[in-house]
Image (cartoon, rainbow, N blue to C red):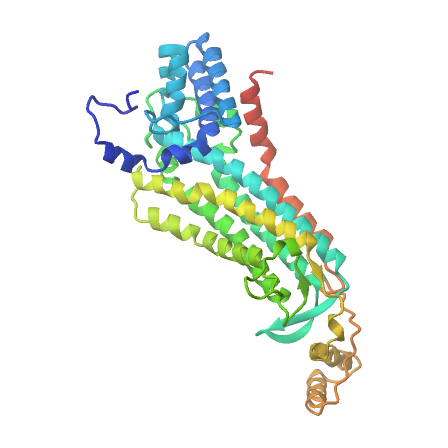
Length: 447
């Protein structure tokens, strides 16, 4: 099959291999979205007279068959096709002859890949948001389960003040609500239609861009066609920052869990099936899963910088440099979801040490409680602070381990319900259902 851009001469095989790169492999991830985009595009082309009325059902029928192949694993990008766009057009032309060649009117591979990436990204963000919510719920469940169990809080890695496992688990749950807010912003940036921008300068065909925007369930379009093209790389960078935010939260949780699982702390016990042993030390139960999770999360936190370094010095317009972003961007979603799934599994099965307060090394964390008790009874705070400090130095301090914290977000008032409501509200504002319903309508045909 001739290339879409064929001009009658052969390109050097090594040059072709170098320029195609990993596109055939990675484009398999984009294939279902390329088909959906083509279905919307030709529906619009028929409305403006560039495809005959009787041709549209035939084209849509073949595209639905191709879509089915992308779902059951039978769709492949053949060696003579350099990318997914070429393969879809090749399959249509084999089935329908010259009719299959009409689908490219009014678009370029530039806006095709932009569209594919945006449809892929919004789908992957929905899946990622679901995985984040699963971890969020697991953390909240553990927070409530262990809400009464105290543990030391630390500053400078020194025992500081009373905390609780309810607070510890709950802190990571609330951190995920902020991360979800960033995912929401990333989703909204991705959920804008670039189709019709062609190579970045529009088309002389009277395209109906609002129609394809509605058919694909986008919130709006990228109105300025030059900016639509400039958005390549920018969208990926913004999404990468959102993914990195989630990874940052999970990385910190993994570090805590490794530390607290060690014999020197003994705060938590990880499930046995999530640990590994030593080849020479029979007692070892190493937290390898969380160590790998920490490393994978830290790698993901470098993703925005990778993308920036690829696209940062490019002027407006399209450049082939942007192809390389796919290699680091597309696999990131699956990696993060695997991290989230594994972390959720461990968090749900993690057990905490409910006997920590029997250890005298944690007695001094109650010193602030004693200062506050004396101040509440009328002693000036600075005098109370000095008295407790002198008692500690003289070995006279005896802790009162009864805790009465009541303000919002404290040991005695975790605000679990309010945090859950924040998460629910953020997810609802994404309106994931609109995109799903639009895609399903395209695949079903007219109701």
